Length: 347
Image 1 (tube, rainbow, N blue to C red):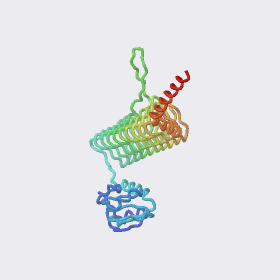
Image 2: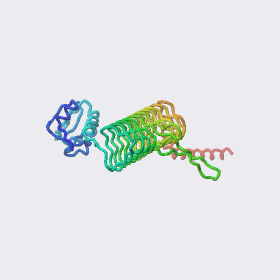
Image 3: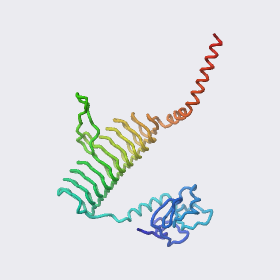
Image 4: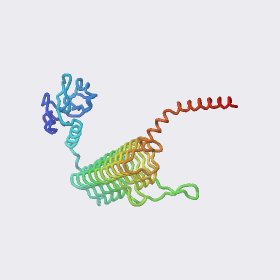
């Protein structure tokens, strides 16, 4: 367990200490859940009351903040508490010891090439012609098929499966159970009323600095490649179909599904449970609300909500009307009765 003193943290962040400079912490917690030995942070004024009751040993606050009551914890004043929390988490993560060495229980083909300072855990399987860059972390029960290439510094957590011929770039993180390169969903009806399988002969290419969540599946292309560009971040339980392309630095929350041959641009944000039909092109800088369904192309810099997805303001206007449908229905029925009564009088 690593411990850090207030003096060490303040020195790293360029902060000022109010309290015991030798106070120590070994973990990070939210201000409302702060416990002994933890470092907490106050970034939102509505959580200020927790500052006076927290058990956290050290609390990061902005320089502009002035407590209205006595504080038991040691305070570290910084320019931007939120940004400093991120820096501390990165420091803590970097300080954790990295695993090294190759388990005797791993199965590694003679033709595979493994770089320096790699870790390969128990029951990992590395097939023929695999190339693993320096400093990679291959956790237990990972499977790397024939000819797979893994870039330097990439981490594959337990149970990741990468089928033959696929490529993963540098400094990527693939979480437990991710499957890269399974066959795309390709079938053709036949004369007997069944389906013939369409061979999926392409691969998956994942560029550098990509993170893929647990149990996310990215299918291999029918021909050519399914491509996940640099900096993409995919949450858990996402399905990416064959021949899909996702642009740089696009982010997607859990349970999104993207059907075959669709393209998503750069710097897009897809909220949870978004569905994108096949052969759809999404532009750059597009934001899509949760549970939205897109079956048509979307130009750059657009916002979409709903099912089927509508432009942002149009959706909100439609949603406002939808909430009033019972009232509107009642008014229409009343007007119909009044109109019927007037018609009878005229007759």
